[in-house]
Length: 194
Image (cartoon, rainbow, N blue to C red; front, side):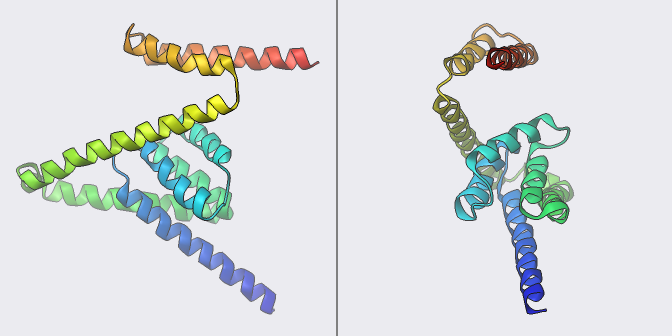
């Protein structure tokens, strides 16, 4: 009985932690889904060690390719990894509440906000912070690819950048080609191992 009570208390603590941390992350991450990744890394990987850095990058890839907001999808995946189905419900609910409240307030007071110089300055400052977080995430993802010591994957990054930034090739086309090339590489490696 005492052991069961301890397990129940432990579960409640994890559920409460998921609620609070996802409310916090969702409240203070402006600028899109990729900004959530460094925050989830800090709290779920570095502080609590619920999963590894590689697990986080895999979850980020799944969150990006799944329909819906990346931030919500990643919160759901992290919640599932930590506490199963109830973890998903808690994490998604906590990730949705702050944007709904903020959007409701902004909508209600739109004319006041749009003409306020302080609000405009704060939003401009947030843009710089979001850009820095996204650059940090890109550096982390690239360093993980370089750690795999795959010349093929390492050269794909600058080629894709060059194709989009310099040659103005459509991103969807670049992603499609990269996916096709990676799938072919996997098939080639499987064939080679047989």
